[in-house]
Length: 353
Figure (spheres, rainbow, N blue to C red):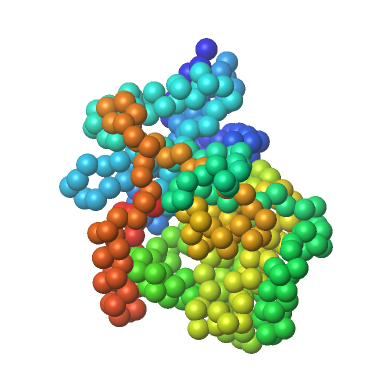
């Protein structure tokens, strides 16, 4: 018999033990993601577990979020591509979803959003233009083998960055001023890039919280031109998978191919840490980032985001870009960087994407 209940911070070990052993989970299912959200943005994390005769057989992390004085949503999970409910059996999976709708959301009539992500890749030709996917790469056993697997054009692009005297550095969390400085350097590049894209940026406190909560299940890579940081990425680890939720390079240096060195350094470190699959993150089929990720040998796995209202599945979420959003992005790009870096995080916390 399956019993579903809420878990708390005292259950973090058994939660992560299950998440780390389950082939269906992502790094975002780890207890750390919800804790980082609570500590940096103040939203409530809810951890729901399914038990069968005392054994944890399924999990569903949720975040209750929304604008002040407006209806809240239960999201699994915000700020990432793939989470939702995962379980060993269909019975446990159904019980988790029912619990979210009937026990947690019932009193407040809150919509429930589950960001389900397939772990199996599909033939790219079977996908429609505009469909949202995440791009997964099966990693080789060693960095040398991985490099050998790349096409010659890709290898030459990586070498171009090296010939341009770019270097990379892997950084892991530690409670020092030097580490905080590295986060500042990453954030400067990332925030500048988000401004160019017309998107409000996450707070620096958010990134620090993520790295602090994940500790040895995360790492950061910075790319340098001499002593100047011109690119960076943050990678999260779980089971045999490494995922990169954030990566940016300074557009002024793109002619030097920093993006190629960044991703190569990220992949090399993932292999060194024992990862067997690399998740390049969300892309739109046959658009720019999709083709960039595809050149590394990755394959698409569909994202199946769903929304429930009053316990009923009402739609698969449309992840497309609206005309209103395009207009807002255009205005945002024109605002001074100092303003968007101050205002952006205050807005970004309410944007679940």
